[in-house]
Image (cartoon, rainbow, N blue to C red; front, side, top):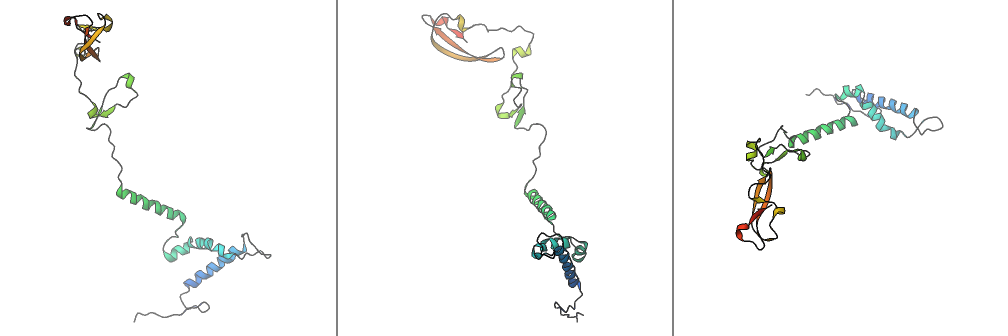
Length: 200
């Protein structure tokens, strides 16, 4: 019905298409060549009998020939090809669950870039917005040609104090020559309240 023919095959009476028998003959011929030449362990006639150790090399040599490719329509899986396949598999597995970060030039809304002075030039100029404070222009910035007073009126330096200090009444923080400076309202010993002065 299927137009098939039953053919029995034994070692000594092959009745098939001869493909397997041809392959066996080729392998036997290769074994003879390998066993006869170039091996380390030989008997007194120059032949070797440790043919079992040659089997992996013979198998690899046969599987990498053109006949193997024509018969099975595929190439032999060598170590180099297995490594390449493993790399490609690992690459695809990694790329499925991981994405490269998208870096954009500049700063985002959570960071601000500031212009640092020379003394801080080695620091990175980008800071968090929460660390920044608004800048208000001072009189010196508005009018740079004006003569700057080293000491505001009514402020007495500590070296000009009128004797030993009895107690500190108040404290304040002012900006002097572009720098924050803390000053104290002090009362001198054996003096009245009208002699209280701000000292730096």
